[in-house]
Figure (cartoon, helix red, strand yellow):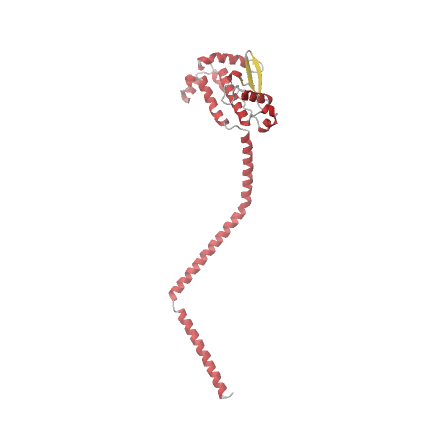
Amino acid sequence: MDSNSAGSSLDSLISSFNSRITHLQELVIARNMYPASSMADLSAVDAAVSAMELQVQAIKERLREETEAIPKTKKLINASLRQQKRLQNMSLHVPSQMVDRMTISTSETSRRLFPESSGQDLGLESLKLGEEPAALPKEKKGRGSPPMWYVTGSELDSLSSYMRGRLTLEKVNAAINDMASYAEANAQLVAAPKKKLAENLWEKALEIRDIATMEGIKGKFFFLETDIKGPALKLDNTGKGILTVLRHLGRITETRIGHHRVIILQKPH
């Protein structure tokens, strides 16, 4: 190797060595430029990343729980829809005023039959009933409530258009409520002692009691044609049409006793 080549190699080595030293110096300067703040920033970034990892994990767990709950939710929805359909079918066969009528019918009948005791409270009324041991068993061992055998939509649709006319299911079943209240009033007239009745009702009570003992009527709920005074059932063309339909469907039977037309309520078969 000649002297020129050796000098060139040495210069190249020194240049490379100086370049490496300069690079290291720059690295040292960069490291020591912001030592405190850089460490804090790196710690904050690490904490934020950890928090995000926890949130992602929580989201994954929630998604897994929701996915597992989907089949149960579908079953619950299907069951609710089936129940809703059943209730809708039932509501088609129950008149809207049935609950109100059932609630007030007994109280109205009692006030009409026993006006002298209408202003007394339940406590005094129960004490007075206790003074009548003969009448009390009749109240408790009587015939119960009048039958309210409602007509279904399919039954009404099965009738000829001539018989059905413009009658609706609600009108027909509302009339059944009225008939039950008429029959309940007559049943109370039969069971009530004389001193519990208003004076103007005693003559009718005797007449109703005679009818109640007749063959074919005894032990059944009934009312007279003259009892028909609404609010839903009246002695007009619509009311006569309703009675014809109910007689055809077996809800009522009729007989005549003296000058009275007696209508008897039938129980469901």
